[in-house]
Image 1 (cartoon, rainbow, N blue to C red):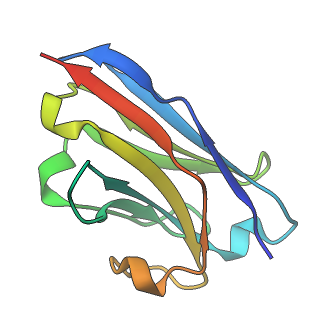
Image 2: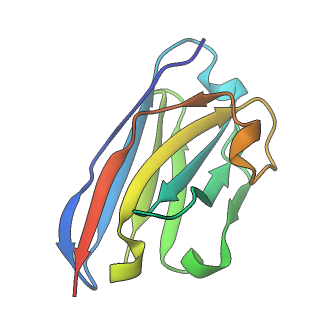
Amino acid sequence: QVQLVESGGGLVQAGDSLRLSCAASGRTFSSYAMAWFRQALGKEREFVAAISGSGSRADYVEFVKGRFTISRDNAKNTVYLQMNSLKPEDAAAYYCAAIPTFGSRRSGEYYYWGQGTQVAVSS
């Protein structure tokens, strides 16, 4: 069982940066690949980025490449999403999720989810 708690969301202006954190419980954190998804109001949840258990591999959706960076600190059981050059269209609830194997962008395949943290971006 893995419990995930996101933090770091807030209201920023376009062009600003935010760093989201996701703290995980349990002693098996490094055995899980982690991902960030987001869901804007009235839209479906979408994949943003994922990172392997060791942190050696990462995957990004095209529209965040070069702006967002996913990382993890296994000693702290925490995964991060550094978001730079934020745009109004990045506004959404951001969720972290855990899966045993790296490589999936499908939300339905993820085992554990956090409660989400809200990001708002003003133009």
